[in-house]
Image (spheres, rainbow, N blue to C red):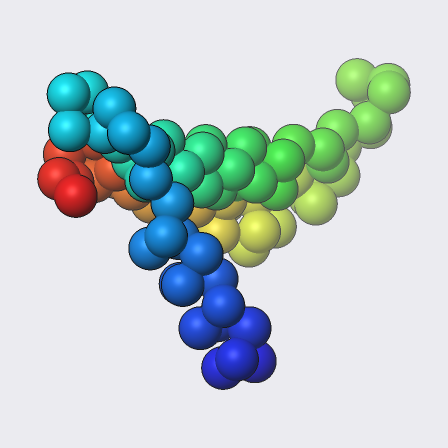
Amino acid sequence: MKKFWNTIVAKFNSVGDKNDGAMPLTMRNYILLLVGAVVIVLGFVLMSGGGKATPEEFHYEIFSWRRITLAPILVIAGFAFEIYAILKRF
């Protein structure tokens, strides 16, 4: 696992573009923005579901720990990471 992580970090550090100095956001910033967007989407996917087709039935699975706690934390963390990705200077 450590070798895999080192490979990912090395590829991230080697990403660059000849116009990075002239642009407000570099290629690394865009990669971090993409990671943040994936975390936000994952949070919304974890939040979805739990409803039934008929409104006469009520199921308590909409109040699961995943939908009430984990998913909102992921969404907020994703937005916080997006802010970090925009403000980070490489």
